[in-house]
Image 1 (tube, rainbow, N blue to C red):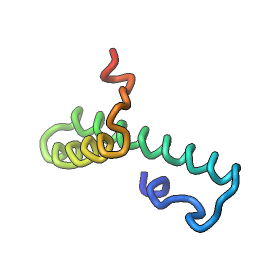
Image 2 (spheres, helix red, strand yellow; image 1 turned 180 degrees about the vertical axis):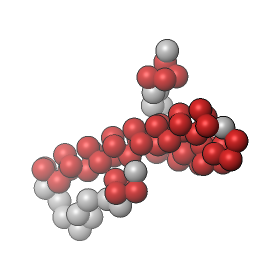
Image 3 (cartoon, rainbow, N blue to C red; image 1 turned 180 degrees about the horizontal axis):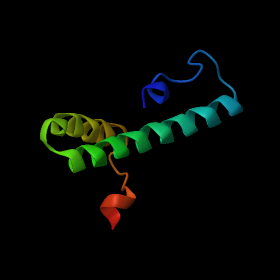
Image 4 (tube, rainbow, N blue to C red; image 1 turned 60 degrees about the vertical axis):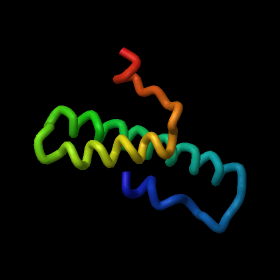
Amino acid sequence: MHTANRGFLPEEDAPWIDEQRRELEEIQLLSLESAAQVGLGLAGPELAATVRSGRRLIELAPYRVSLATAC
């Protein structure tokens, strides 16, 4: 999650760079979903991190529907 959050060659522009950025964005979203799901499962002291992950996910992709919530 932290690696994907750093961005990829921010000063550069090329089609292959755009593809890598899209892949990193997807990895970031998947990692946020995973962190939120794990935090819910652990509960207790992990709930604050779960809320942060969920809020960041909503901020980045407000209309995204994860498989977990779709089932």
